[in-house]
Length: 333
Image (tube, rainbow, N blue to C red):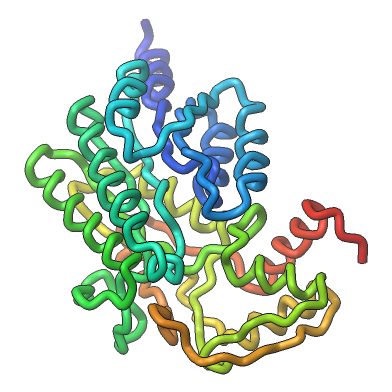
């Protein structure tokens, strides 16, 4: 076999990856791009009903059209099922995105977060150890920065004071990743996502809720009386960041994936009004428990070590989201 053919063969056999949460928002977009790039993707998701399962099924239906996608309906808390499934696949990497999402939901349903986010992630790390999978890229969150006043948020900042249980579970996973990397030599890369939005987005997120209520002529709830800023990040940029992390070998690192451009909440609403062609009915409310006033990602480390930076501005990204929403929900304006 020629050196060139050996190289091509080596690249081919390295393209089998387990992705957890493929029926979820980010997992779907990542799996779709990986499949388009020639990867074989083993998708794991339990299709839970935290939000409307129909959008999860719609995402999964698109992925299933690709012959290189294998879907397994498994809860990551079910270790034996994960273990049995992984025996059937020799994979080179796990991208772990499955989690119980939602900062506010964690206040009302704490045990779900302890089970899914903490125990479930432990199971994924154990699967990597037991099956000698050398690399795990896993989702963390900007929420770990809590009420930090210093901006932009840097990976060097202290994150020992979370303001929500959701954030605490994500911080716990970062600590577990460090232990597994140290003890077993698994390459662990954690990615702190900053307010991701885009087509096929989560119905519990602001962009989806606001657009839905705009088209249904219902009020939108604006918290902290509108005095909030978010580092909104378009999903395609996030996916590109994940792939950059997949293509780099780090013993144990954490990176911010954000737009590094905080946007005022009222400007965000204004852009949605523009792209929907409707004026919002606004209801102003105090700050919610577990929420923070501002998020802002420092990307210095990410740009240097992952060679990644975002390319989609908020106006462009929200137009794409609204266009998708109208098509998906068959809205005629």
